[in-house]
Length: 350
Image 1 (tube, helix red, strand yellow):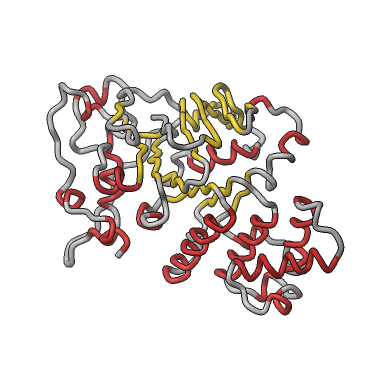
Image 2 (cartoon, rainbow, N blue to C red):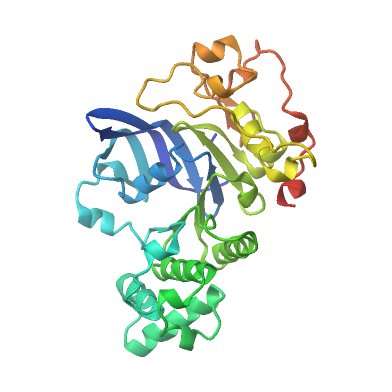
């Protein structure tokens, strides 16, 4: 599903990531492939434990000590990142090439240092051309303004505990920008914030993407959060991508039953007086070899073949693929649930 009109900035090919836990092996990422295009916003969506964060942490060499890449490639800037063995190799990637924003800003900020000094550290480390205290300080003021923090001269001298949650997240974004990255990974950046602040942060990221020519990878469990900001959506389940397409593909024409379930879970699709839809059951254990379609045990409309053989990848269009036996010409024609058939993007945003 290569888009010939766009330049690939990062390419994941047949990637497998495993963890050794108490003598057992957990297969967290299962033969995953993904192209990330320069200048796009791509959302990786799925339930907790589906492998979203593990996958993106591997782009920065941040897997936990008991995690390892067993096979596959991560190609960036002519290099295969899976071949990196030394910390100094990763230091050239982290921050200055690929930066990450975490969901809890307090874990990213040093409570003992002022906001300004923490952003200034990133400027000095990743922008050596900016020299001298005054030049660095002016640069920090500019980043604070860009992320929507007023009175930067005053805020520079304050500490994280003097900021609200939304303001702290803006500071974390400023630190990421100060690293001057090409790719910005946003790992559930609005989960800890209320709905109004969520919308502000998402709009801010959209504006900064354009201003700084960023490629953004969003990680989220909520399709609704990225409805109006993602160019493409990659739906992950049990360590594999089950559907990838443009936002229009995934919202208007979803093909995998798991994508149907995620969309049905959006509160905006609920009917007054009826219970909100929930996905019954739990994801499969990744300690065991998965047979068939990983989502089959939770899919009330699963086919017999779903329990016997893993579905291959079906290309629906140049931009849209899904791994479901429903796309096999021999499969019965099943329509998505009624609420999804009537879905329009604005309804998701509502």
